[in-house]
Amino acid sequence: MDPHTLAQQAILEHKILEHLKSALEVSLAWEVEGLDCSRKLSSVRFVMQSLERHLLRMMALEEHDGYMEAVVDASPSHYGEVKKLKLEHDEFRTATHRIVSRLDSLTPQDSEAFEATCDDIRRLTRRLAEHSRKEIDLLQEAFLQQETGLD
Image (cartoon, rainbow, N blue to C red; front, side, top):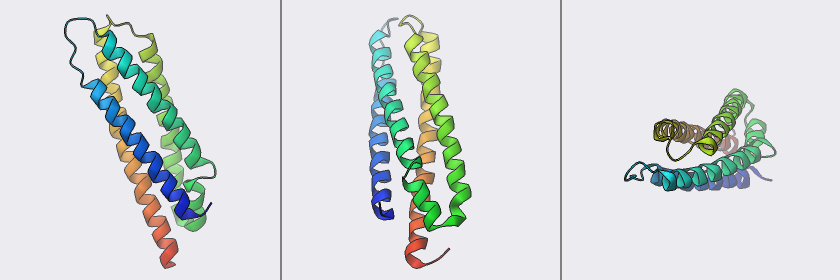
C-alpha cells in the first residue's frame, strides 16, 4: 500500500477513536441520582469495551504493514520515534485491559471504586489524545520529508 493511503487509513482510524472517546466522555459525565450507578456503569463498560476493541485493532493495523513500517522505510531517521510509539501501544494495551477487567468486576454499589476507575479512564483518554497527536505529527513530517526529498 502506498504511504499516502496508509496515512489516510491511520487518520481515519484516529477519527473513529476520537468518536469513541467522545462517547466515553458523555458516559463519564452522566450524573447519577441516588446510590445506584448501574446504568452509568453499564454505559461506561460498553463504551470502554468498544474503545479497547478499536484501539487493539488500530494499533495492530499501525504496527503490521501499516504506517509505522512505511514511516521507517520513507524516513529511517524516525525509527526511534516509531519505537517509542510502539512501546506506548504496549502501555495502552495493558492499561485498557486493566480498566475493562476492573469495570467487569465492579458492582453498581461500589461507587468509590467506580469513580476511581472513571478517573483512570480520564487519564487514559488524555494520554491517548497526546499519543494520537504524536502519531499524526510523525506521519505528516515523515511523508513531507519523503515528498521534498529531505531526510
